[in-house]
Amino acid sequence: MRRLFPVTDQTPARSQDGADREWSLDELADAYAYPALAADGHWLRANMVSTLDGAAQHEGRSQPISGETDMRIFGTLRALADVVVVGAETVRQEGYRPARAREAFAARREAAGQGPAPAIAVVTASMDLDFSLPLFTSPLVPTLVVTGAAAPSDRVAGAEAAGAEVVVAGEGAAVDAARAVRELAARGLRRQLTEGGPRLLGQFVAADVLDELCLTISPTLTAGGAQRIAGGPSVTVPHRLAPACVLEEAGFLFTSYRRI
Image (cartoon, rainbow, N blue to C red; front, top):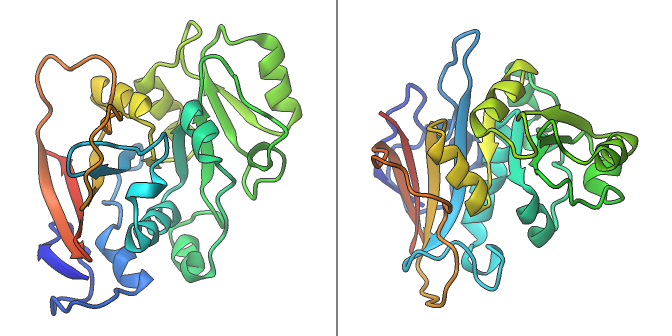
């Protein structure tokens, strides 16, 4: 892996030689470290992958356009987060399972005051989820279900019976994206990572609560009508982000852009 653009944070990756080699997990964790947060602060980063022609998925899933190093970064970003925020449709399509504890990051998480693994927070208005899946019945950290106050009461009861914590972040059935960020932060989940899908990321963009985008650019073309990384209504004024880091490996570009 080669660095093409320097990290602008205070904690750059330790390797500065630009060597085309596999980086260690510690080096990746240093490169993607969250910024220092104020006592009441939070930071929402997104991790997404896109083809050269803008597709966020191929045949409904992101795995076909990903790669080995992309998955290493995927795991590293999860290991740095307090919570992984994901939309219900992505949970269904990608077959989400609970986050696991990883020995390689155990000391780093303990030093940061984090538990052994991040929680998974599923954002859903309909509560159309299978609460018998391991994501709800056997997570290392209880899964959260983020929904609106008008969510179906029987589905709320089903989630709670399965051991999930239900977080209300909206007055109606829909979830208020900005409130979801605040509600999670209020529970001590301040280092936040969203893995989409495109509809959820679009809601975070529209609410102007996204602090960082980690975007893998896959050296592939798919054509077709696949979604972009962010969907939904467009914003009135495009949001400008500043580049923080660009890495390259096997033709993939691993970029990070942060709020200006």
